[in-house]
Image (cartoon, rainbow, N blue to C red; front, side, top):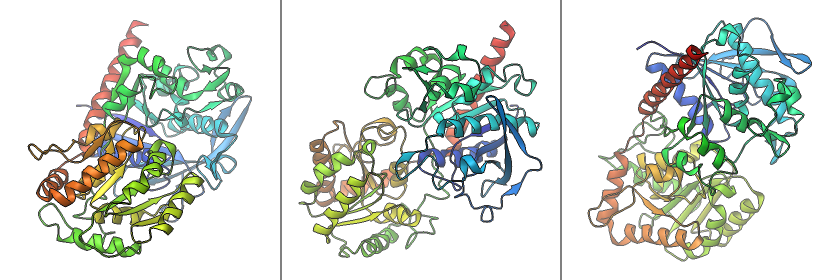
Length: 495
């Protein structure tokens, strides 16, 4: 098959900048596509947290002029490669927009000019492609931050020869965040006020960038098959359920893969001892180290339940807060790594002070500790209210740490519920978003650990043999890209 020119655009990319799962995808998918023989380029902003020296960023000669309404704004471009690959990564540099502490906010408060920041970034991507003489077959954009690009492709750049046959794919990693701004954002977009209407960008008098992307993209992808179904419902649609249902013909659900070169106990250099499904002795060592890290008694005869999570409403932290007292009545240990809503940080820290031999908390994020929790825990808890894909439950499978999850989105797609009859399954699922359902399922998992140990060990073996490889996901993306290109050409022939 012909080699494709693919431009992947994201507001965050591992290892350069990360706030969530989007960064993991944007850092791994390009490498998998490159391994399949395609010409892949990645573009992201150059935030100040991106260390130029550490990652070997080099300036691309010449500045970049970006039309912003009535004026032209100038930026610079830096270049490096994704570590462990030859995939080029381009960084759009502009001190006024990206020379800040945070990616999107500081101390939980979003930057007031986020519309200008990411419209500038989107336009800069288009200008960069022209500067590089790179003619993408597909531009793959992600979430609201880059959703203006499909709009620009169909308006400002509709007759630009550089994008004559370029199609667009919009991946939705979290529909809750939509990029809604005052209608003055139309002046920055500068595509004509005729596009400020309920069928394109207008949403209750404001501009909604994600809405514009959904309408204008050639295809939409939700990051799991279950999430692609869920966003067409009132419960998970965040007001867009009808808009998306009307466009079901271009909606797809491709499950994210996992980078097993980083997240596998057989090769993980951040854990106390490596192990695999055939030899779990190293997992016992990792468990002891984890207990010591959190100042918990080093007991092999108690199940350790791990959590690595943003402390945000979406992640089910209120359910956990309601359930925690009853869970801690059991003979268990819990370790939590995360940060987010201040009430949650204070609440779980307070619980840990009351149960120092049962509950360990680290407020913040530390990659090494995240690996050690995956390796040293027996169970992993993800009580999310919604979870488009989720990655930690997939990591947990690989580390033989059985997930306890709410059956939503990617959690439902990736975890098979334990069935005692034939010892099948890879974890424990609950369906109702209630503290009672969460507590009951944790008790079920803990009971299995204590009383049905043969079953538990079989589940662990089942889990560790699961594979969610990026090669599979990348092949699905290539098929979708080719479908987009065929559709685009068909439209051109009809004009």
